[in-house]
Amino acid sequence: MAGHSKFSNIKHKKEKNDARKGKIFTKLGREIAVAVKEGGPDPENNNRLRDVVAKCKANNMPNDSIERSIKKASGADAAANYESITYEGYGPAGVAVIVRALTDNKNRTASNVRNAFTKGGGSLGVTGCVSFQFEEKGEIIVDKEAYEGSADDLMMIALDAGAEDFNEETDSFEIYTEPDIFSAVRLALEDADIPMISAEVAMIPHTRVRLNAEDEKAMNKMLDLLEDDDDVQEVFHNQED
Image (cartoon, rainbow, N blue to C red):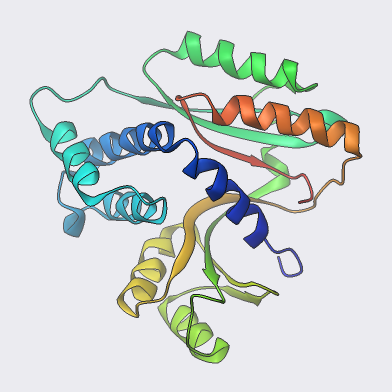
């Protein structure tokens, strides 16, 4: 997985997210609702909720908004039940795309996702059509400018906590874990006050596809349509950044 830095892509995505905080917070609220339903409202006893709370903080969601979402999800008037659905398909030039959604209306979500693929010059596929091109991994990105320690110290903290891979890139450090050990590694870094710009379980592509300018424009249109959909939580693809 070495040789490919996600830092600039994450920074760009965060800048876009800053311009539409309300929509991002809505998506994060759904993740909180699902996590609370699965494991209860206490982050100390609910690893998934703890990871979602960390994700909320990384996206600058205010603490009172996080607490309000947890309280709402655990109350008698909890929000609608959300179902997790994964879609797979192809973007321009055969780029592999995986979309993860949380929805209370599968028909609406399927229609919106299909529309985004079509308008972006792609096509929605069947389950399994592209997932074999990815591997699920815990992925943690540390901003070099925000981190004051040495690369060796960071690597040892990560590896001692169970990480399986550590890459140093131009602007960042990339840490990879098996999905079931991700929470433990992220918590170890948090306890060591390591500033994480991103921490999530992601689908990491085995190879990447470089697009020409026209296909890249179409791909960006597809991604914008997907990310603007409240039901869509995550989008993974193998386009070369």
